[in-house]
Amino acid sequence: MRQPLPQRLLGISGKLLIAAILGFIILPAVVVTIAAFNSKAILTFPPSAYSFRWFERAVSYGDFKKGFQAGLTVTLWASTIALVVGAAFAFAINRYQFKFKRALEGLLLSPLIVPHFTIGLGLLMLAAQTGLPRGYPLIVFCHVVLVLPFVMRCAYISLQNLDTRLELAAASLGASPLKILLTVTLPLLVPGLVSGWLFAAILSFNEFTASLFVTTQATQTLPVAMYNYVREYADPTLAALSVIYIVVTAVLLSLANAYLGLGKVLNVEQGR
Image (cartoon, rainbow, N blue to C red):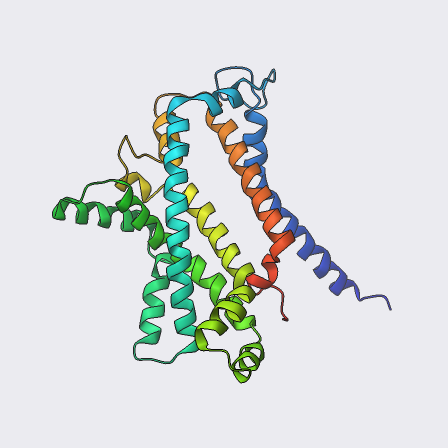
């Protein structure tokens, strides 16, 4: 049956609106990608000639390599600690009732609404007042605070989707609570936990605002190194590095979605 004209116009308008929003979001990435292949040492669009020279500089520049190593160190520690702590808190909030439960949940999720520069500045002031050095422990702690809500979200949704009858069946067969946790619960939570770790790693590695306050020249992460670079140079190196960022992040998320099912983990797709 043919739809009425107003309903068809509404459907077409909705599709055009979605296309416009997607174009608005994607357009900057397209411009940066094209500008990254500019052969000249000046950011121009569109380029008059194309070259891969800035990609070579992006992967060979000394500060970028040190920033990558520092960022990787911070990311591995922060995402792993956040995974353990976030999964434990998600399990406690999902399975138990206790006093100030909602207050604790709100506190743990507060980095989602508190500006990152506020957290970074607060930690910088705390370090200055207590004499705590601005080394890797402080940076890792800062990143754990920032990525913890995302790990908790993934772990909590996985717990919500978990069929508790499997745990009850194991208990009825005489399994202890610890054995149930290790042999039933955790294996079923692996997709959510891995997804949470991956999100935490991507967010930690890309974190700039808070890192700017708590890092030093010796411990600066890659985004901070990029910020320092753009203060001195105006060539397309950062555009090339941004393209590498986009490609690597897209590949990681695509693989995670293919093998872990991010839609279900994030509760986008319903069902068990």
